[in-house]
Amino acid sequence: MTIDASLVQERRLVTAIPGPKSIEALKRRSEATSAGLGIAIPVMIERAHDAILQDIDGNCIIDLGSGIGVTNVGNSAARVVDRVIEQVQAFTHTCFTVAPYLGYIEVCEALNRITPGDFPKKSLLVNSGAEAVENAVKIARHYTKRPAVVVFEHAYHGRTNLTMALTAKNLPYKEGFGPFANEVYRMPLPYPFRWHGNPATITQDSLTEIALKIEKEIGAHNVAAILIEPILGEGGFIVPPRGFLPGLARYARENGIVFIADEVQSGFARTGDLFAVEDEEVVPDLITMAKGIAGGLPLAAVTGRAEIMDSVHAGGLGGTYGGNPVACAAALGAIETIEQDDLVARARHIGAVISTSLQELAGTYDIVGEVRGRGAMQAIEFVLPGTKEPNAAAVQAVVQHCQSNGVLVLTAGTYNNVIRLLPPLVITDALLADALSVLRDAVASASS
Image (tube, rainbow, N blue to C red; front, top):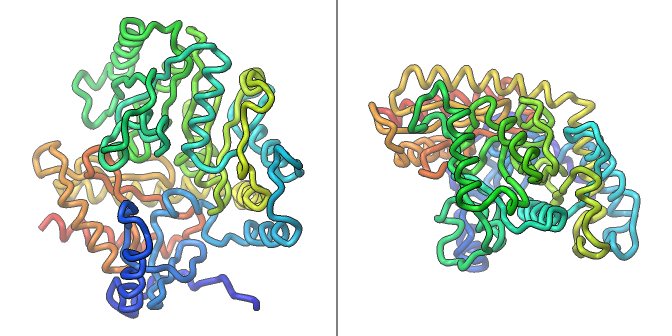
């Protein structure tokens, strides 16, 4: 049976959200799945294409979340689907470390080519962003023969034991799951909207403070890696001040520390560059990737300097499903789509449209504390009027209004007071304008 995967790219509501079929299905969800699983929107999805999600009641919802920055190339993107079908018909699994195949190699060759850095690179494929981060730390420790890992306030790096230790926020990610891995040291992050010092000297002041803390509390000679998201994701799309990432990379280089860029959420054209570090021409030693890498299939990667990636003994890296052939086929389709359809330029255009709309909100409503982001990775931080106190209640009101009117938005932030926008990079201008009009009405309602 052939199924037409396309959907008209327009918002359409035929029932309330959630509709009766979704309500019934959500009862089954509560009976069958762990209560520890959260939910962003109370519907049950039946079909999806590009930037539209259709639920089992027939409602067509505009997707401004992309499955948390995964479907950058659109849901069920044609090149991804075609390659996946072809691969499924050929074979579905052998395990690359048992009986290798070309798809894994081709993905690694592509990553070695498109990631920053004009030097020999090699790659490792795994299943998830957390697994990529964990392997990057393993590799850095093996290469340097040092134990310590430096991370930052507001960071999110995953849900495994090690990556929970690397993650800053307790609830919901860490509460009750300890003890966590040791030799992880957290540094202050220059968060421009909430910076405690002189805004004019934020970059140099923060770099000086971090260097002093590392020297006094750890010893730079004990640090294997500095790990940072170029734009912090779950922490609230915090964009570090200009000069901070280059300065941090320079400090790492001067002290023999592996500099790791966690591009799990910000990679694959999301920010208007293939990778967010390219905005300031930062070249990491290792880069971790997932989410947008494979158009919706589970795949992640570590790419970096060949001498670092090759420092681990044979058999020290691997995993049964890492670089699954079907996921590799999807990745090749996603990368081809990004390059041939120039989704980097598209992300910049989307970013300009969203930023203009959100800045208008900031100039009109005093619950909007800051608008920030880059490319198609934009956020609004909500505050109590006249202050910088977090306003989580406003976020919930905006989310509820958007959902009820057929627009999916995601939340974020250490203080639960940020709405983040991650639309597919193939969203049409008309659909984006419609979604932003709903968001505008939601903020107006929350302000009244």
